[in-house]
Length: 104
Image (cartoon, rainbow, N blue to C red; front, side, top):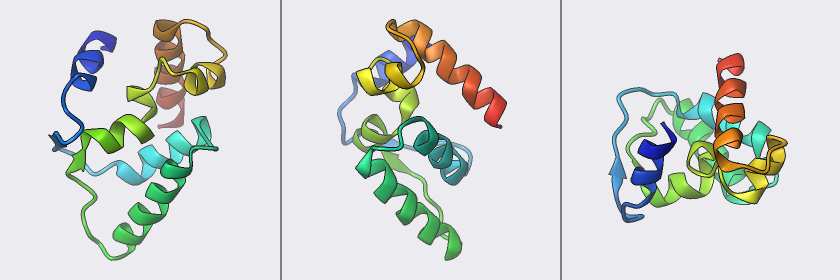
């Protein structure tokens, strides 16, 4: 999974992402728990909450936005690795995935 996501991260920031589900709000709440000091993530949560209240879709998204706010595309950044108590990116990803599984 890390290899696949790493390939995805190599695409241009303007790449559109069309996921087949509407889990943005719950995913952002999890992301905030992992990275509470990420101001762009906090702002995105407010925007998505407003869209959800208006019953508007929150997808598609832009890869650049996901790279800045989605911990599963930032598993090897110091902030996420520290939150996972890891110094290795792959182990950080594994811990992150485990936490998400428990949160779901």
